[in-house]
Length: 166
Image (tube, rainbow, N blue to C red; front, side):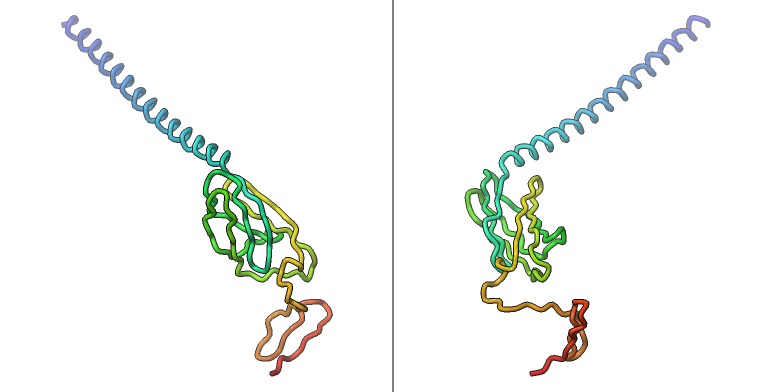
């Protein structure tokens, strides 16, 4: 009887060892697969980052002209004026071309020069813009807060409120 129980103990130890080895192999396989996927994603990002370059060519009115100086297509650019996001079109700009991004927001220059920031997934470019970048035909610009009806409220501290009439 003692011989049979020692054989059972040896078999149980072998089964436990095999189960642990299979679990370890499964863990290592899944970990190496996840590591490989992460490495491939980082390599892809690095390759794209190396091929991505652009410059801000000009600003006129609500149009911002971006030159793609890289070897990959630019897309998903975000624009900011003094770190405030602009509502813009989202064009794709092929390599070696100039694309136009249109801003739907009017840029207030009553406080002087502003900072335009263009961000891609890996690069950020900044430039200073002023009233000369808005519309050359613009003679004057007054910012009013919203009123009701025909009343306009001055946004400055001077209280130059008024009524609009035709």
